Length: 266
Image (cartoon, rainbow, N blue to C red; front, side, top):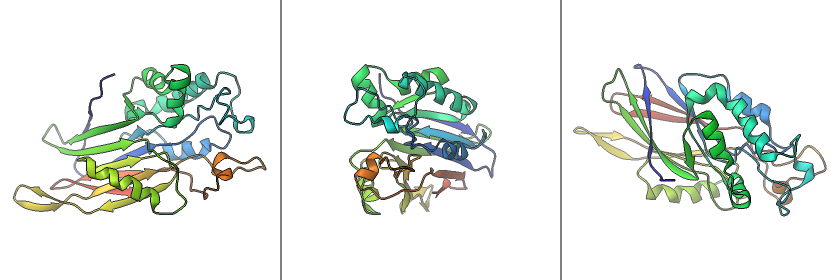
C-alpha cells in the first residue's frame, strides 16, 4: 500500500475551536482495560471534535502467543479474539465515523499481521470507511472559513517504540529527538502508556511579521491499568513499571489572525 500524506479539510466559523482526541493504547480485550474510561473520553459525537487512532486499540494477544498470553488477562467471551475485537470497535466508533481523521496500527495489532497475515485495524477501517494510516504517518489539517484561504497544521504521528521508562522525563526526551526530523507542528506518540505533553518554542514569519509557532509533543496516554485489582499481576506490574493515569489528551486548535493557537489538556 503506497504511503501518502492524508489531508483533512475542516470548515469553521471565526471563533470556533477544533478539538482532536488521539485514541491510543486502549488494549480492548484485556481484563485490565477500562472501557468505561474510554467511553467517558470519547463522550458524545461533536462536529467540532475529531479522532486519530494511534494503535494498540486492540490487545490482540492470542492463545498461540505463548510468551504473552495469560488466561487471567483474557477478557473475551468467545474464541474469536480478533473478530470480537473488530466488531466491538465497529459498534463503538460507528457514531463517530464522520469525526475520524484516520486510524493507525500498533505493535499489538502488528503482531497479528505477523502471526496470522490479517490486519485487524485495516479490517476496522474498511468497515467504517475511514482512512487506514499505518504505523507512522503525517496528517495535513487544512481549516478554511467560507472557502477562503485557511490555516494548515501538520501532525506527525507514530505509535511509538522502545520499552517504557521508569522516570518522569525519559519518554518525552526519547520522542523529542524524533521531532527534529519532521517539519510538523503537532507530534503524537503512544506505546509507553504515559500521558504527558510539552511545548517547544519556535518562531516563524507571516508576511513581514515574526510570529510564534511553537511545536507541541503529546504522549497520548492509555486505558490499560498498570496494576490489576486481584492477586494476578499484569505484565507491567511484574516488570516493576510505575502506575500511570488512565485517559487521553485533548488538543484544542483555534485559528487566529496569523495562524492558530494550540493547547493540550492531559
